Length: 362
Image 1 (cartoon, rainbow, N blue to C red):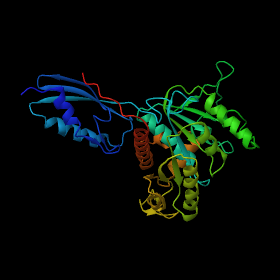
Image 2: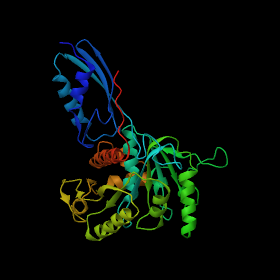
Image 3: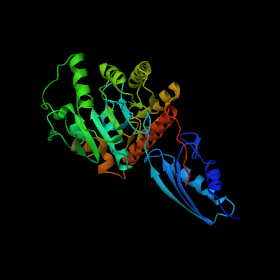
Image 4: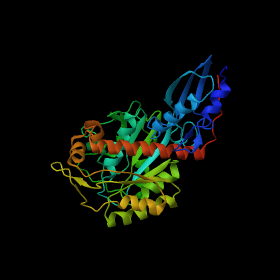
């Protein structure tokens, strides 16, 4: 019995992406199908290189191909093409035409490790193969320069009008901290803040990016409103710690993003528990499970939890994020899992906002 392209496509149409809840053919993820006798070669193009469900998709695809009558051998090539919320490219719109997805990392209050999450999220996505930028939008307390090891660096302008971002740990980085003295206090009113923020968004040569992550200032101030009116964000990640006072602020942050029509991708619980380095006993210093409880209350995903560990603080102070300096640690693996979950949620958002591509078999 000879095998046809139609047979292969029928088999692959039975494979469902668990994150997107759509079959691979309808999602346009099956490409370059080549049938030679009883052998087939094809490419599965995931919607992100940080796909959290690749193992499940691979197992289901292989099982589907094994069930095709007459097919003896197959070869699957894997790839990834990140899609933007406004289409295949340009989720940043006219302001950032090369940026596919803008992600906001926010918190209802300070001191919850928001910048730590933003930096490690950005580096984790880059480690998976994505093109990533990180903009420190926390003008009153810019900590990204220190945490990326770039505190003594300054960006350059190739033409006197735009700035080239700095590079660290595989990501492009920009911060107001690169442009002012470290001990200089910014005493700016709203209009000045708005203007400076939009300059760092618009006048930086970000180039082509799969994800531009913005580390927002804490609270529910002007920055999120400014961004919601200027760019189309793929979504926001909320960072909290387990105690009740932090969770109360998460409620307010969630309500703020709802009001400005920015989807919340999920909640990250930082400092979830302290693991003793000597006896490995877990101690819930700030309580535990509050982030998951808040996610359940809002009906949004719980993206993961980060243990309280000295390595995370030391890594930030040294300018080497824990996902880069201690890749095999529990903390790094937690950040990497969160990055995959965030990428999966962004892919789900893009599927809601763009027409599905038409599969072209060859």
